[in-house]
Length: 143
Length: 108
Image (tube, each protein chain N blue to C red):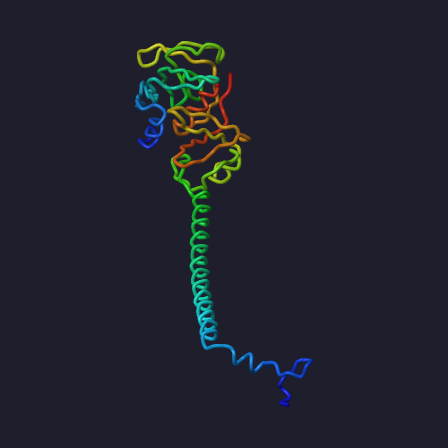
């Protein structure tokens, strides 16, 4: 008896591995190869999709950066006839004065609706762009 | 005389602003000037002297007094018109647009 040959308890030969392998038809191999090809194609497609998603992510990040830059965009205001470029946003008047080079001991007025309105140093102002300011000494009093 | 650039600044708050002089004194005529008074705005014709006038470093004359604001109002004849002004002195000279808010402080 061949060492590879299997027998049942009654001594009868049963098909071994070689025998069972021999039972495999060519179709099964082809199906397996087809599965491998399909899986490889799927891997390639997934790779392409990942690459596409990475590009989308890069674009989204660029848009986010642009939006952030827009949020902190620079605008022009006029202070004592001089144009000043500042970030749009909210400031305390004292910080804004320092930013645009107005001495702390001067008072700042904003031109609004055709009239000058004084700004307290501890007040907040929202800068959107195109605002017009005038600074002046804090003088004048009842005599 | 103040410059045309100075006048252009004042025109932003008073479009009809013009320079005018009398007897060597220089003024800015400010028709229908908007004057913030508390939380409201009143309108007056105004005349801003750019030099010392009637013993004050400068003056802002109004066509009519503003009730409840300023002290010791007096009347003056300037440029053929009667004007009114409270006692308010020591406004620093400068560009008219700088002098104006210092004068308007008394009416806030």
